[in-house]
Image: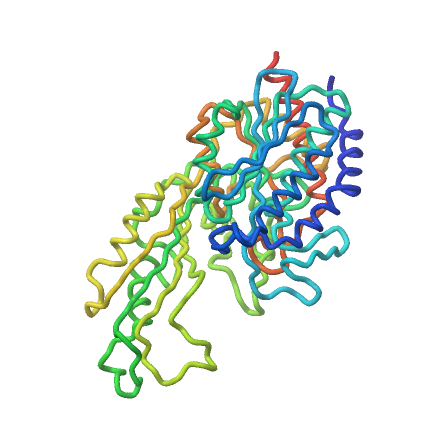
Length: 473
């Protein structure tokens, strides 16, 4: 049977309105911070509460043959695995996560990370679109097909609780669950973003990442700045010197070529297409202060900077008192947290080793310089999409959004995708998501555009139906 797009959309809308939105509202209230941000996650129990909420909702779905199990390996965050038998031996793996980023400051009045608030079609709260909606969307897409008696392949829904920490628990589960999961011919990841809210956006690449702490120590204890300045080099100044080895502080360009790759021609052309669609929105979506401008006025260059070029961010610091507490003391040390985004095909382990050498060798003035690497994560570049998948995504986007599907790279990282790409090199991939302009994943005032969540769910139904037809011909 072919899928009735109107009936599918209506059914999905009813489930979102009557069941998903209330469940997501409860999910927002759970401070299920990823283990990197909550070392006592096991004792605090918030991740377990989030898993329990998803488990309770899932088992009530009208899905034939659904089985669900929470897997727990010693010392690791849990994984929720849902198995839905299908009308063929093919397997579709649908992925999401339920752990969250920390609170972050700057939430608007009446909003907060653990305080759900709905304003029109937008539901505000931490983790609502990154990636709390994924379990609900995946199962509703399957349920809509079964309600319409449209066949689909076996579907395995995998929800982890460590993604925001780099998915370091997931490889162990993938090894342990490999016989259960099997080899999917299609992977649907619901943890990406969208360039606009009026089309289905699928992701063609993700950047890798190297996080780490750079510490410069010059003294064993602080000394009166009047007595030491001009004699003892400031640890902050040495940090500035070391960062200049990596980044041009005027242009933001990463200086060593080791961290760059050749950008594929087709990705450059994709960037041009996205720039044409987004126009000034490629810049306007960011909350610049008055008078502030981006690093370039060329939208294509901005998109390539964000998707295929390395870039440095300073995401934390230590050893610096608050301004009100800062006395006339030359501080003994400064620590800054570096977040180096890497091109999709740049090897993260090699980049991490190169970065450590770059920062630690030949320290200025003989200062004690230490760079401590957190687990590096590789990026991901999508394999060529099969004609049936390109056609399916485009028809789904036109049917439910009214516009053709769009393809773009993402500046962020989903470590799981690199892992899957290596494990399942013959699989097709559909990477999509709901975090669009202004949704501010990881930041204050994070929200989910509810119509987009509903439409993405309906599009996944279409793709699952088309996958069955394409693999059973």
